[in-house]
Length: 142
Image (cartoon, rainbow, N blue to C red; front, side):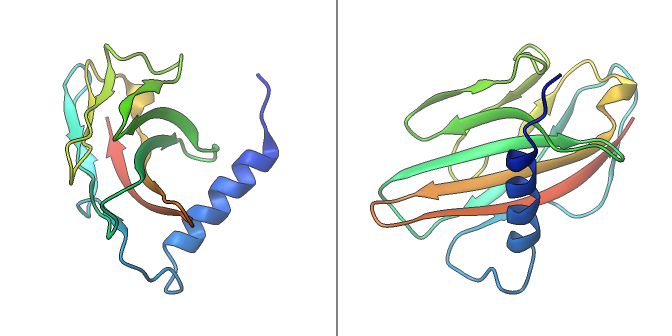
């Protein structure tokens, strides 16, 4: 497996920045606080709601999975002008999300023990003059 360290460092920086007090703005992404506990084989839906002050431009939501002592892994992308995509490792038959403003919940079916992780919802808003990222995370225990 090839790991692009610069991408990971950028992602880590963005998530740290977005959870810091310096990240103030009209756009934000929110997940319900608290851990989610589910049984192997179950289906779980992790919520993610967002607010954006812009009515034009591209709004894209990403989901990432981070296992203990691991790096964030890209799961999927959904955007306002298209269906988005899923990473090969996270097939749509088990990992799916639909962007319906103001939410993009992640549905995970047929849970495996290996699905235990922190799941991050990341909002990217691209506009004519700027681009912004906002993120939030939630832990799932199987």
